[in-house]
Image (tube, rainbow, N blue to C red; front, side):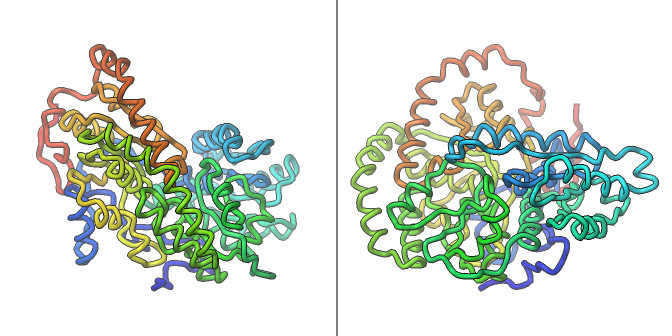
Length: 498
């Protein structure tokens, strides 16, 4: 049943995940223990007496909006806060070809460049000038204002300035309140970005399009376009690479799917609650059982049961022999996963599907519920129910000192990661490490095969990491690598640090 309090488009700001969903960033135990804690209502967050690093919600909010083709984004804060946002300009250009976008438009990211004087006297005037300058330069169809800690602390009237600029320019000017200090959970930034999109861009439906399916994703390869052709459906990628017009009419779709609940939980719930577009209540299609379940639910919701039966029969016949062959090669091998929540769960399922035994996982946060409360959407519960428990299941918000300690202990045959920089730690310990940023790569029957091939290839070509281990300089001391990896988790630590 929908928790109606989670989506409120009348509010300028979205509640962070700690308050809205009860999300956590600290846990040690097994995956089954975590699922049971949620079921029993016993889940509590474990703090850390030492923290090395954290993600910032601002970059994730920008990820949701900067890749809209006819948008401009203004970072309202010091220019340094805009520095991490330009990675999306690079990613946008590089990945466009995989999505079939021949000429993706240049990203338009600006900064108000707040200085010390602005933090004393306020940055409203500078923000208003920057909005006008951005509009004059690139003539976007929407301007997003991404707040930062500096503008949030001094209390700039971002909403008021945006409303005045919107009336003057005649285009949506959308404030996105995502200051880093708001939340320890980086994915609260996704919610803030999609809250702005749902509030200001999506329009009520004029007519329903019974072959149109919304997709909320990062920037993966266009697998859905090929699948949907066989099912007489059309894929409407809301972002990235969408235009304002595409987003405006997303309310006319017959259904919404999300490839990762970490990313798309809020927007999918908003589309269902506010615009009547139902969300597919099944975890994404990673692994045989979830693929079968997901496509059958898609067929039911779009009245294409017969087409789905034919599709799944063809996929089984084509890919099952190779899946079995890869399982034989990988049977008995061990693995470790580090990734964001929902996609990390998907990778654990894929490993089990391929015959590997996950020794554990370092997952960046955990959502005990999603914005649409449904057990069938609970990707970790699905993995545990289908494949069994995962030991050493650690929730850590990118605390690399914990990951290095754990890898030193468990020494898996392969490390799988979703985010850049994490595979470095496996390589330093001589562990073959695989990073695949394309979140669609492992989907469906074909995805099981593709991921399996890459795992086999990575494990067979381990000479580089074995040599690297011999010559690397580890930044963590021998003392730390001998400690319990959760020394600083759960309560104030009295450990003497050398």
